[in-house]
Amino acid sequence: MQVANPSSSSSPLSVHAGVQQVSIALAERSYAIAIGSGLLDAPNFYAQLPKAASALIVSNTTVAPLYAERLRAVLQQRYAQVHLVALPDGEAYKTWQSLNLIFDALLGHGCDRKTVLFALGGGVVGDMTGFAAASYMRGVPFVQVPTTLLAQVDSSVGGKTAINHPLGKNMIGAFYQPQLVLCDLSTLNTLPVRELSAGLAEVIKYGPIADMAFMDWLETHIDALLARDVPALAHAVRRSCEIKAWVVGQDERESGLRAILNFGHTFGHAIEAGMGYGAWLHGEAVGAGMVMAAELSCRLGLVDAALVARLTALVQRAGLPVRGPVLDAADNAGRYLELMRVDKKAEGGEIRFVLIDGPGQAVVRAAPDALVRQVIDACCA
Image (tube, rainbow, N blue to C red; front, side, top):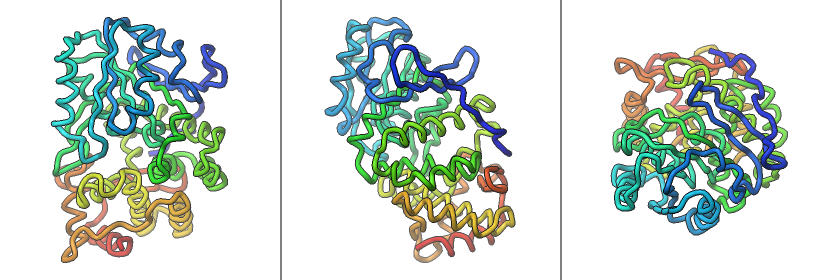
């Protein structure tokens, strides 16, 4: 499968100078992704949201002290009551227990089906808020306000919502689109360096599977991204969202094409589950997973070793691991295979991998277990 030259669907928003917009085209579920600095406090962005008596900000214990009151202040211009729930921070808390904290807040405040939820945080907060919005009273509106690079370029866009299960990542959830995605680049200033690198994994993945010109650009600008250069970040977020918007517009519910966005994730999710959620950040696991998927692509004859080396170097320059961990000293490859059979792309127990099918192209296909074992043995510490 190839993304057929995904191009910009964006135009500057008239409500705020310097803002870029990417549109997700899904008929009546269409919405905008706004990208720029200082958007969190701009009331015009919230003017077209559904009217309601109340709103609930869902954040976590790390992000809420930084940004929750700023968001509450601007939302109080529109909603009579603005409530806040701060979840425990981390992938380890992407659970039923944390999800119920959102429902407890909604029910405790007497929120109705018009209440608007605001996800203020990274991918974990966004996924859980979206799942709560999809479930509460069978569906209430929600808005993504992502504060991590990973969430701005990937998890906040496209309507995937979920929680984890001990046996598999994101195995319990729903497709449910937000009303708006508001990417305030200034929130990335408080992002720890490790989290910034983790977000770059989800930026890098778009190059080898969809846009080699973007990969060229990333190789030139990776140091600027790590230095949080605003124009570089704006371009990276915008281009990532453009590619994802094009793919989601073709395949909202991942019946085919959208699966290519999981490049590196089959190996990566196995790393996260095998190490225990939170031991490796999602982007760190995806970084190593992309190298493993590229190596598998090479061994299947789909790409040459030069492209694998090029991708590996870029992942490493982003500050990400390029080798997977050992999950089982006795049979490491066997443990990886066991965990990957739980992957959502698996069919009839057969693991299906997102592979590079030539530069800038992707394919979803199976591979012989023996070959996958060779890759794991070669690519793990």
